Length: 169
Image 1 (cartoon, one colour):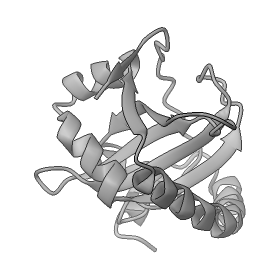
Image 2 (tube, rainbow, N blue to C red):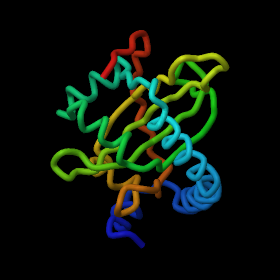
Image 3 (spheres, rainbow, N blue to C red):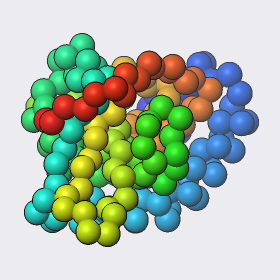
Image 4 (spheres, one colour):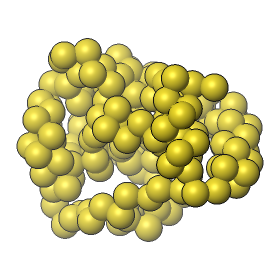
């Protein structure tokens, strides 16, 4: 059990369901994270790539005092902890959804959630869009001790995403 296990057990609304979901998620991630690491590597090696941030991400970065250089650092030096190819209900475009985990300038854990549309034939560049950024230690009941795996699925933070504009970081 993780060091925050006591918090999880007190908080969790349905321990049996969350354990089952965590096991299913672990199986899915065995395959997904390998692919995510390869995609991250290709993206960073591809000379024509850009990183943008949604209006929501910019708002959250300002609200949480997270500098764009920290976000770049997590994308470039962090590692993926979630990856999927799904049409996400909050995101306008279909594509890959990544959650990267890394450290901010002061050693705090950061999660950066991004979307990456598939590179279409003849396309000149990949555009990764940061959708939101947060410090998972603010939600210890949801994560294992090193904030790399979700342990409780009861709690869903309904954040409002303003996806009308993207801004280059």
